[in-house]
Length: 141
Image: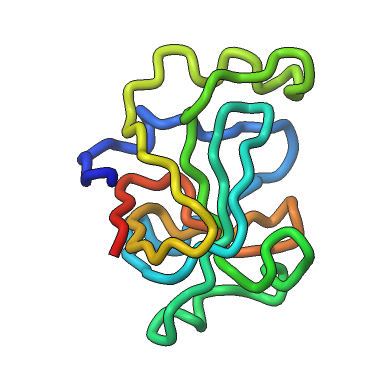
């Protein structure tokens, strides 16, 4: 169970890549709820999950969220939750969690019902899917 921490985006890891912006921020702070349908731990140290949104929030996903990875859920990124796998992580991400002082969460499991707070964005470089990224609060509900 995580708790709300008032952390500015400047203190959280935000990927910056050459070229056009990767993210379009729709709302700096939203709260949604739903059931976890996918949990993954990529090499960059983040924990990511697809959250099948409860009815009041179901319009917050895009066509880009309906794929084998996200299964129609909003993509939720819990940044810097585990040690980075330096043998498989993309080189530009090495060191991105150094000095991270944001929240560390009890990691969810498939089937958990969660209430999640964070920044609501569209990832325009990876298919236009909707995300909560970064996440500042996770509560099992």
